[in-house]
Amino acid sequence: MTGLLEALFNGLSLSSILILAALGLGVTFGVMRVINMAHGEMMMLGAYLGYVCTNPYGLSVFVSGLASLARETAKIFGIHWEPSWQTSIELHWNLYLVLPVVFVVVGLAGYILEKGLIRFLYGRPLDTLLATWGVGLILQQVIQLIFSGNPKGVGIPENLTGQWTYADSRFPYYRLFIIAFTILCLVLVYVGFFYTSLGLKIRAVTQNRPMASAMGIPTSQVDGLTFAFGTGLAGVAGCILGGMYNVGPNMGQDFIVEAFMVVILGGMGQLKGVVAGGLMVGVSRGIAEKFYANALIPNLFPKYIEEVFSPIARITVLALVIGFIMVRPSGLVRTKERVYD
Image 1: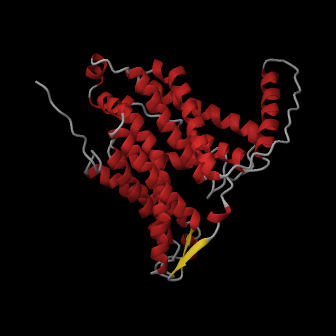
Image 2: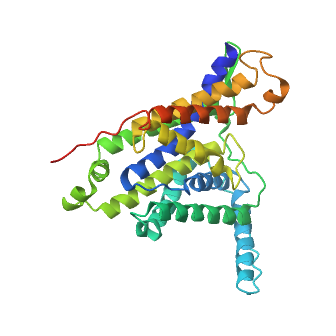
Image 3: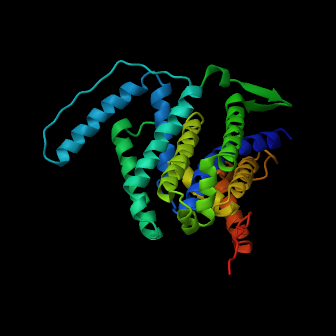
């Protein structure tokens, strides 16, 4: 019973991160029909921004890393330049303050990406997919040069470092915070989509882009703001993820596959489906990990299975999702469309 409670709890916290990441993908695809392969790198940017703002030495590492990036870039063009930028400023901000900063900064990066690249590729899904994939690779290499490959971490407040114990089960406060924060974000997204002018415009563009444009809605502006909103959510997801796992240049790739899986399972462009799909994938993976680690049924699997329980759990969940999509290609939530004669 203890193992099952912990599995459900860990699955809910994982589901929360996947929902935040997949919400951005779902909104972006629902409005612009764009599959953003750089979405994982937006999570990575959010995690590194969280590291810079919460770690006392984060800004110093960032500034000296920029000097290293400038030197390597100058070498490419045959320029001898040896900058040695340094700073003694220590930010050491609280995570509660950092999260809205991450949303704005990463959202701005997404807005620039949409206006500078993606807007020229609408109607060409393969080109958009390849272009955003290339942007993701560039961002990975830039971050690698600035921060190196050494793992970093996002600092969490002291009041979130403990844990709550119930029936011999341990529930870390930070995971409880992640679940509560995701619920708050879902409420804000719901209010924003159904009770604001921008939300009305987004829903209009989603249902019928030509008609929305004919009614005077600036669809290009809606596209930019929507893309910024989606990437901002990805940045927030990466920032809170950095409080649980190591922050590295490739961290986005580890979670973007599952985020896409959540979007497809829930139904492309369906926000309700994203929530349902995130819960199913996260909880299923949490239970599967405990199951293969012999935490639910002792000595059920041999030791060599127990040692690689996490990859096997991921494979199991992926197989289940593939089987479900084969039976129900539309996903958990079907898209409702009006037919006009």
